[in-house]
Amino acid sequence: MTAQTIFVTGGSRGLGLAIVETLLGQGHSVASFSRSVTSELQALKDKYPETLLITQGDLTDADATTAALERVIATSNGLDSMILNGASPGPLKRMVDVTPSELAEVYAANVLSILPLYRAALPSLRKSGGRLIVLSSGASEQGFEGTGAYAGTKAAVNRIVEVLGLEEPDVTFIAVNPGLVKTDMSAAVLASSAHTMKPETHERIKAAHAAGMAQPPAVPAAAIAALALRAPKELSGRYIASFGPEAKALLEG
Image (cartoon, rainbow, N blue to C red; front, side, top):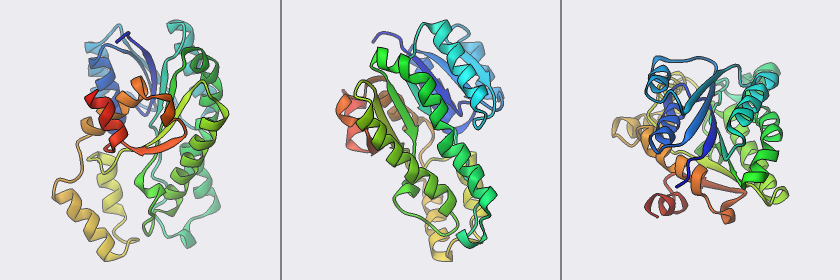
């Protein structure tokens, strides 16, 4: 496969870092955008100095994100795919306790941040027939107590992706549910949601983690990378699972 250029947000840790590492290992050029540079991301830069570009900024700062993306497009002479992974879990509270400002903050990070990046990338993605992959969540389909703000943002992402798929025939848009992933963020969310979820719900999710049902980030990362590189046009506008048949077909093909 010809080497591609991919822009990845939230690439400094967890699933985002695993996506960056997967793409680099397959010989592609990656631009990672994140608020910080972790030691793990710097280690990848040391290993892949020619094909990894690290850019920094706040995902909710439209000027910073678009400037980073425009720099990548200019230096790489185009863009093949974009993976929007950066997200905030938001306030882990029952909806009656969520303030308007807290709701605005999580929507700014998880939904509104997509729009300036999409607009800036669109000319290059149209030209390359590229793909825009947005990380969604199973919470977009089934809410749990205390996760209403986050779940609402991911449901919004699914609908935006569906509409973009209808509006832009030259670009493939996909919302991806990565499943239960073993990351520092998921562990922190599980620990801090004990007081908002029903005890039986919290124990069920906790038991799933304890039983090893949470995947290491490299597993969904491989599927997400495959979608960014090879997803067919007929998947555009869809919400799919990284462990579903569509992703598996690309990994096995």
